[in-house]
Image (cartoon, rainbow, N blue to C red; front, side, top):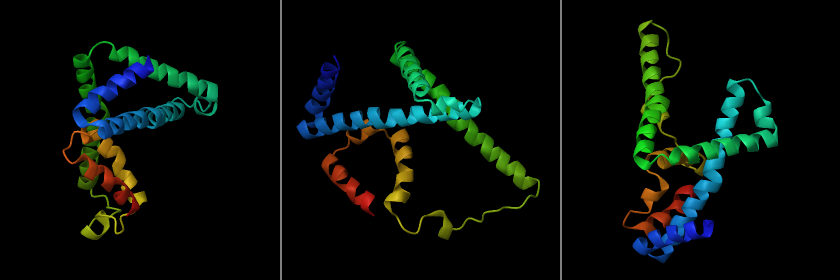
Length: 173
């Protein structure tokens, strides 16, 4: 069944983008599933372990695997309600998980300043941007690119091979 789903995914992408880009799209999907989702689940399990003061969540492999299965099957069951409802859920969770904390941090920052407390960091053009762009500094941008652009949208760009050839160049800087 998985091979059929993967083949249909390839036919959809390969038909519109060509053979090479179709296989590239499949590779990005595979990387997202095997690396990205496992990493995100490990972060969730680690956060739950710290939050509930249960270190065995994160240190016992069988418990960690069980929690990963609970997370992945919960997501699967939630996705069965339909794309439109999932879109609304994603919008609300974005608001609650990203926008609301950012707004609270900004408000807290201004309250801190208005109370006359000192700034411990002084920003200028010299210390905002990194002086040397290396692979280590560019790695910090990857989660933002994936979160806001998504891997699938990168494949829809016109000059896909120019973009794909520039990725190793960016990482080598």
